[in-house]
Length: 191
Image (cartoon, rainbow, N blue to C red; front, side, top):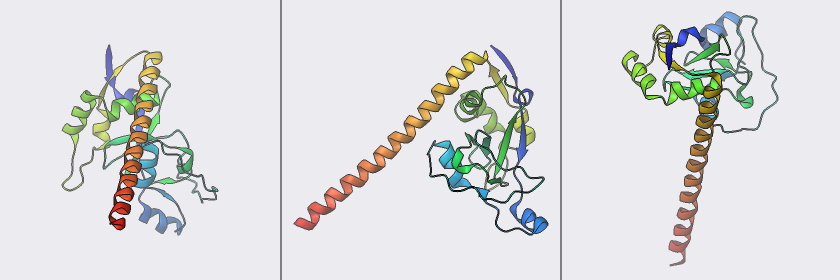
């Protein structure tokens, strides 16, 4: 199995500073990609898509469905879903731009979020006092295993399905706990 630097396949683009953008363009109505949006995308939660009448700026490209985003604070990656397309990426996130089709997006998610060797590399590069982050320079140095595209797609698809299943199981557990709590409370009221 070949190993190569991740920078051979992708580039990392940091988000923008909302305060600077609002001052520079005198706009306060921009909708930024936030932690809630990231959690929706990471957990594959489909939300109702609101009408996309968001303002855009000439030199700041809004997110599109299918873009890969890294949460700098969580050191996790997700693919932007339709509900979050059109939002502006803030400083808390980094966009991953794929330079070629030689790296599958879902395989990238698996490597970045779950592959132990990449996890160890990321842990070595963490910087910061209160919120640990990985600098873009360090992200570029990550070394990943490169498989045939067909194998990448298989692994990436399986990883995506595991994440979806985990999300459903977590939701099922929450609903079960809520149901049990309501039954217990009803029994206590009757006595």
